Length: 151
Image (tube, rainbow, N blue to C red; front, side, top):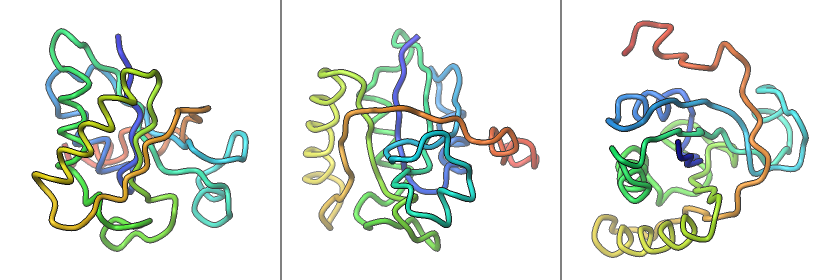
């Protein structure tokens, strides 16, 4: 199974959208991209941790490619707004792709360039950075919207 890691605002809605994507086998929400080890939700929201609310997507490449996951990523949020998605403001809500290898980096950069040219009128501000430690969010955040019966 392959893995992709993305940040696109509040992880609850992002998880729902990836969960409903054919070829995605499993998702986990968490925090990555910052400097604090084992952060809590409260730290990520109210302190300067540098972490983004993120999602780890496990996918079957025979059913969906990484490039196709990137296409989903661009469609599920506004990558032209810096450190915000809708009413959520702060660097924890930034748009980012955390690549795991050089192939993912290359595909992410190519996909961003194409999306910037073909889809969005405003400049994409999405970061493309090497994945570091991914810390699972607390259990109550996992599949939060599903627990509420929203999918």
